[in-house]
Amino acid sequence: MPSPIQYEISIADAAAHLFEVTIRIDQPDPHGQVLMMPAWIPGSYLIRDFARHVIDIQARAGRRSVSVARTDKQRWQCAPCAGSLRIRYRVYAWDLSVRGAHLDQTHAFFNGTSVFMQVSGQEDSPCAVRIHRPRQRWASRWRVATTLPRDGAPAWGFGDYLAGDYDELIDHPVEIGRFREVSFEAGGAEHVFVLSGADDADLQRIGRDLKRICAAQIALFEPRARRAPVKRYLFLTYATADGYGGLEHRSSTALICARNDLPHATMTGIPERYRGFLGLCSHEYFHTWNVKRIKPQAFVPYRLDRENHTRLLWVFEGFTSYYDDLMLVRSGVIPLADYLDALGKAITGVLRGPGRLLQSVADSSFDAWTRFYRQDENAPNAIVSYYSKGSVIALALDLTIRRRSGNRRSLDDVMRLMWQRFGRDFENTPQGVPEEAMAGLIREATGVSVTAELRRWVDGNEDPPLRRLLAQAGIRLTTQACEDGPVWLGARCTEANGGVRLTQVLHGGSAHRGGLSAGDLVIAIDGLRIDRQATLDALLARRSAGEPVTVHVFRGDRLMPFELTLQAPPPTRVKLALATDHTP
Ligand code: ZN
Image 1: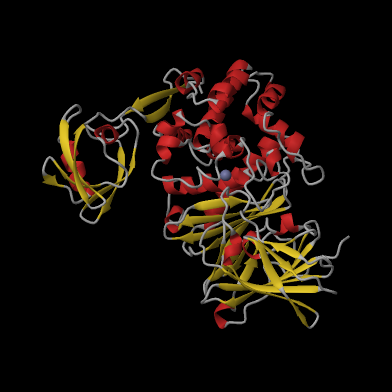
Image 2: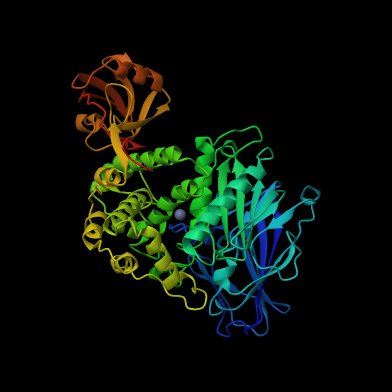
């Protein structure tokens, strides 16, 4: 076994948000060791250039200092040296998101991609990590939550951890601070929900609900053995005033949520905000199979210095988005009516974007790096989400498979085949799902051919015929006006100093047809001042479709008048209900 790379991490200056990292390499490259910071973090498909947060890098071999030179935006090369090489640098950590690193006097959080350089040529060597206990008094009760395998560190403690290779090192985020936790068993594995930042949340309730969701997912993938794919799983959750986000890892997930999303002791039922939070947990847990072990071939292995393109994110994110809420209802955590409500909203979200008629979900997957993750004001007109439309396609495929197989097969069978073929033994024989494999996998798993449907829905821009497919399953789809009120501007707005600013103008709406643009500041309609959203809403509520109005806007510093013909709100709000003649 190659000798491990020894990483150490400590808090250099919490007020300045600086970690200090040292790396000891016992057998450095004799031609000059190259080190690299990842350009992106797996699961979040955007080039983030984590190297830009590295400060003050130094290298030594024994007592001699070794010169370090930048070779590109993410690499450094040390001069050739004899004996073991020691690199030391600091990392600025002030990104409160699940994708980065964050450090102050209240807690420390990091992903390995933000703090640990990769040692070129030794990517497969084991990586030992020592996490140092901060000496400051305010950190005296801090503990460590991570699924990094312990190698001497006590449970929840500072000390030594060991990852099998660099890929594993960066796949176990670490939360350090004061947190509460609740644990439960599912599929023979310990699961722990770890919570920072919300002292009044009802942990027992969260533990009970998550246990059912996890058990339902384990039963989907392993109906006989009912074994979890991990030995231990952590939900690392950080609550803020209004946060939202999650990132999947091989045996944990990092989550950020709003405090008010979490249940409290006197809460009854399942409010929509808590349902949303459980949906997020369910989504990230489903990724433990779908994308962390069943992966697109393009991610095997991850190349961390550049974009990794795949046309399959509609499967890895879309199917996961379909199953996240579905697992809440299947596990009995939410009632069917709540599920139909959530599903109706998801379909509504897809139908509202004109971009779905221009970009396919396969193209959206491929372009995730430059388009879905870098959305601008024109995004709804130009792109489609491989998450939401992907989940609608998953629903349509599930219903199609059930219909054509006489309800003997479903999308579950496809997931199980993918798990058996690509996921279950991924650690020993890593192989990914080829780009063109889905039609064949679905036919093999279910006996149903959906080649034509995939061509139209996935490679093309067609909306799946949801009304018909749902009706065949006993669910009635109806549509309503997308907004309350008689007319619709076809724009999204925000209040701004002195008026209402258009943030997005949807193609085909009254604003677009009348010549308005995103960025315009609306200050008057028909000669009356518009200074707040409420004024605009009240004025539009008294108009009717087909009426002309004069809108004055500032575009930059230029005052411009526009003539608009108001439209009725289009019927894109979807409601789902069990058909009255349906027998459950
Ligand atoms: Zn996801």
